[in-house]
Length: 260
Ligand SMILES: Nc1ncnc2c1ncn2[C@@H]1O[C@H](COP(=O)(O)OP(=O)(O)OP(=O)(O)O)[C@@H](O)[C@H]1O
Image (cartoon, rainbow, N blue to C red):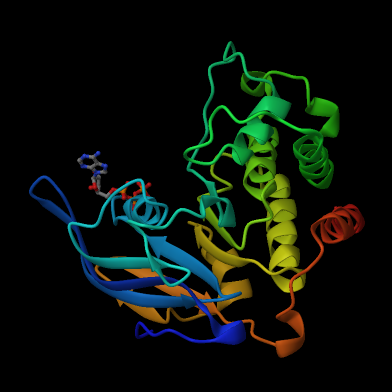
């Protein structure tokens, strides 16, 4: 996966060029170069402490590479501002049961972006929120406190939060940790459906080798230290059109109901 820029359906979504990362003197990532194309599904596997979360945090601009460059949608991450194009579900969102935010508030907060904390919530935003709640089948939880939900329910809330902007890139950091096997299987069916039917590129950290190998591929495309990158390319030209959010999200939910 050499860094390169491509046009049309093969647009580069994330490019890393000889990236290093150090926490003080501890080297976590070195000489990492790769290129993720539009609608790729990247599975990132690695032992504890391999640097998976560090890498995701660099991609979403929360950490700065010690050396090298990262580009998002062709732009250097340092000047990138279109954060609504990216949905990020961080690892393990454990909440104090008394945390005051409701599910609806958490999902709406996905619209605020990095610089927009105090924007007024208009009708269109409310509508997007209701769609995201609907598609994740959590509309009946909308007024509950996030901290009072199960791990599986919280995971759906954070996915709804990430989906509210109709992201082009969805980044999931071990989305099924601590979740029962049945809920995990339903979650992966949903993720696969989203990848197959929607215009979304995925990067997912997972310890679930079975899921990664059955959907993405049996061999990693690249290794770096103890990080392994599995990549499924999905570049059929007929799938390279923008989809209508409302319609596609409703289709997604209907499909999930069939599968669940
Ligand atoms: N803020 C920090 N300061 C110093 N060292 C850190 C910090 N965050 C992480 N590390 C160290 O950097 C290394 C990589 O951490 P990271 O969280 O990226 O690993 P990971 O692959 O996501 O691990 P896990 O599978 O356990 O979640 C680990 O050795 C960790 O202890």
